[in-house]
Every structure is written in C-alpha cells, then in structure tokens.
Length: 365
Image 1 (spheres, one colour):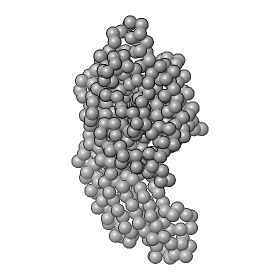
Image 2 (image 1 turned 120 degrees about the horizontal axis):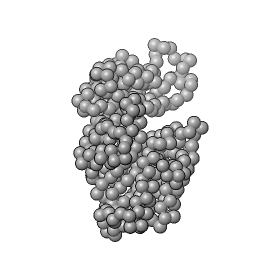
Image 3 (image 1 turned 90 degrees about the horizontal axis):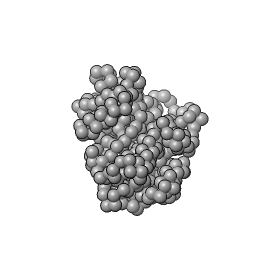
Image 4 (image 1 turned 135 degrees about the horizontal axis):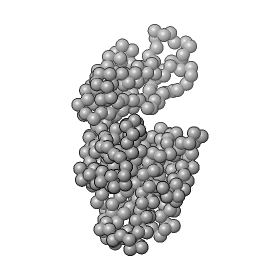
C-alpha cells in the first residue's frame, strides 16, 4: 500500500479525531470545513481544478480530454457523531490516489489516454446526522432531491443547510461535471465478509428502506406534584414506541428485517418536568419491500392502540422511502474480474446501509 496514501488517510483522520481513534466531523461544521479545505488543497497543489456545486458537493478534476465527460470516483468526508475513520474517507482518499497514479501513468506514456476524464468527489451530507435526510448531496446531483428544499433543511439548532455551508465557505455555484459513470469503495459496516473470510464484497443491489417520523404528544406537568394517574407522559409513550420498533422484527423470519430508533428529542427535557413532546425517527430496512410495508402497518396499528391506552396523541408520517436499486450486471462482472486479477476473493452482497452509489445508480452506471 502506498505510503502517500497512508499519510493522507491518517492526516484526514486527525481532523475531528476522537479519544478512541474515531472521528466526529458532521456535515457543514467547522471540522468538515477543515477537511474540505485539505481536500481542495490536495488537488490545487497538483494543478487540478476543484468544483463546488450548489449543495456543497466537491469535485477534484483530472481532465485529460478537454470536453469529454467524467467518470466519478469517491464517497464522503462527513461522519456520524463519534463515527469511524474508515467510513466514507477511505473511498474518497483511495479515489484521490488512484486518480493520481493513473495521471502519472498517462503522463509517462505507460497507458493510453482514456476516453473519459476522472473526477474525485466528496459528497455533501451522506450521513444525515446533522441534516436529514441522508445521502443528500448525491441525491441532489442525481435529480432525486430539489436543491432549494435541501438548502432550507434545518438542524436541531434551527440552522439551515444554506447558512451552514456559507459559514464554512462551501456554498458553491459551479455546475457539476457531465458524468457517465460512478465508482465507490466503501467499508461493509457489517460482519458478513469477516465471518466468511472473504476479502471483498461486490454490491449488486441495495435494500428497501423507509423511515417513520413519529411525534408523541402528552402534557407537561411537575414530576413531584402530579399524581401518577394524572400523567400524560410523552416520554413513557415514546419508550414503548422504541420497544415496538425493536420487537416488530420478530414478526418476520430472522434477519429478514432490521429496525432501529437512533434519535430522540425530548421537550422540555428537564429532570423535574413530565415530558410534553418527544420526536423520534424509526428506521425499517429489508431486502423485501413487502416486509417493510407489513412492518410499517403493524407498527402504525400498535402505536394507535398505545396512544389510546395512554391518553396520548401520536402522529406518524412516512419519510425517506428508498426502493431497492439494482446495480448493472456489467459493473458487477467487471469488479469480479478485477478482483480475480489481483488474487483476492469476493462474493456478491447487498448493501443494507445505502450509500451515495445508490443515488448515483439512478443516473449513471
């Protein structure tokens, strides 16, 4: 492995580094701005142009044939709170170094000039930790989300995407490059390959996913002065909803459905006040759309019964529904041949997590 690659990878991991070798570098924060400036500087030091589009996606250009379209390679540099150093960053930095090595080989006459140019991309807000929904920048680029609507999305502090990007200097206006294909390397974020002793997974499709935006409304009162029988505790109701989301997986064969609640917002969030409102988001994923739809309906029915039992109002809205995306068989076959050519093992795999490639796959191979 290239020492230059390792140096750059480890440097990026210092930006937002946490105590246990992780990274906390959420979208459009000061630390995200710092790693973005490093990314842009890397290309400019090599005499390459960098584009920043209206949603903050960044494209470092290796243009060998003026006017020809680009193949994109990359991933994302934003992270989850207390995220891992390999998530996203590996795909971006590996793309940077592959592009540089190809550029050097072209310059030395070792390979013919390709038909297409190459752009290394850092997608904005893949994680969706600070701003929802996730996979935001690549979905705008692919035409799945409206740019102005996404720029108006606010974080929990009420800061819109537009202001956050402007504050770090990455609210761009460049048109993105004309694109004919996309390649993304990403960690599995699971243990299938590790358990089976296989080197690499070749993604052939994504899972069906959907979220439920859930608001539990009770009545604010004093924790000491309010009798238990008089309480309409939104947090108690929300706690039962969390358990329902967890338990709904048992309605189906083992591992056919995964579910979670990763965020709760409690109001007024005081130790001596019975909560009046809780907002949470449930996440349902399966390789079968029918299973997700059945789980959704089961949850809606059980949540309605819970609201009646506890004298609460619980509002449930569908949110961020993503169908199964199947990747072109030609790409799967090409990846298989490339892996065999370097003597590594592989298997086909579905991505349960979803990545920027899922959005790009609606636009280009």
